Length: 543
Image 1 (cartoon, rainbow, N blue to C red):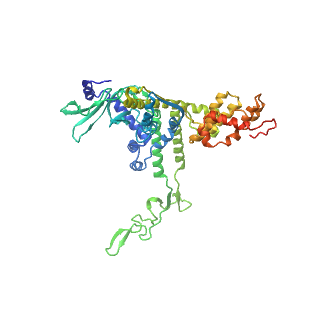
Image 2: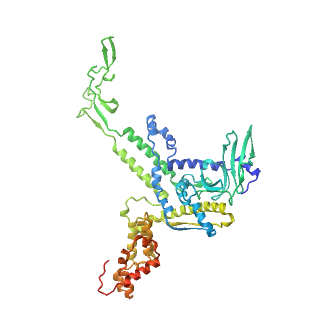
Image 3: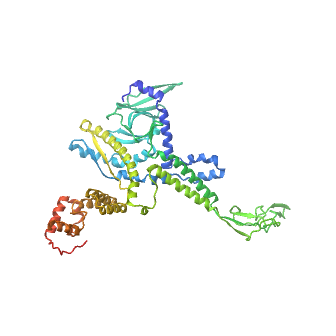
């Protein structure tokens, strides 16, 4: 959208999207509090209407946020950025392609575009879903930045695309003048604002205004989840907020209870203070005046440490008074209340997990069968697909913006595809599925996919080993058959030798050879190796 001068002044005067911006800002504060722990103390102050003054004071000193629980809750999303597969292509002349890749390898803070999205934007995708990725230009360099909803005065959007954006007014040039920054498809404006009485006036500062060097307004909303009720974008964790509030409140009450009532209380029958004989006062012989007893502080009871740490009972005075069978002891706190608090918090945590991922929270993986694992992982994969879709669009927006900025019409676009092999399941679970699939004589293609998943999961943190074993899958003959099964086949002796001596050949190869040589070269080397071997039916077979 290209704004006229009249359009700009009208937007500044009327602030047409003020209500939506205010709601998005309110939601950001709530999300930021739960996920990042910002403003928890102020949020919990709402409990003061249900607490004593002492409980409120204790609560202000021992604030515990939901940051930890959300960190654990969102852990599976890390798989979006480490998933196997995916590809990138840039439609540029070959001689410019490598240069562009170098620029994308350091877009901000010395990290690549993909890493910047993971480390910087992902948290905003969760906590500030209506914020923007905005491409800033300085010294002929374009850099992606994030602009929070709290910095935005007004904007108009179509989906995630931004038609125009107006940032909150600021002071510049060490003057008292206020300036709005307005960016549309054509220009990056700075508008000087002044006020006479109740009437505002605006002037475009032409010295600070410059053309936009992109195909449209260089801004893009980070979330693609629609909140049709409020007409804003929603967070990935939006559905969990009510339950997260309950968890936060209950956890606060539990912590306060432990601090206020969690100490065993010493008690004893009160005995008269020796110096004052239980009166609490002592006669000062010098002044002939009764003064507070120096030993008991006027209580008349024999002191013992800190009087606030014990409960002193009066001695029985008549037959109706209760007589205890001991003269002192400790009164322990009610452990049943603690246990109930802990159970409630565990239930809340499970509810939050189920609300977000649409599956039950399971702590014992060993009790699940492979079939159950497949069924439970699928809802997580479905959710992760939606996150991958969003970040593909975010990366494509930044990539295309930078590509056009630097190369203009020589740049034709990009293709960004994130991998979808999230490897949520453990290697043990995948191995169990693979074993069952082989027993059930599943097709070789299915077995191959499971084997790749197993290797990628097993060597998730070792790219070298992962690459080697994935390559070897295409080298070993009759991959899913035992040596006995191959010998029983009606194949040539040369083919049988390939299977029999494959392990011997593999052990002669160094890691470097396996990593750098192509599959075809390794196959040729294997054939040369077994050509020196003989085969007879009585050849011993070592599995």
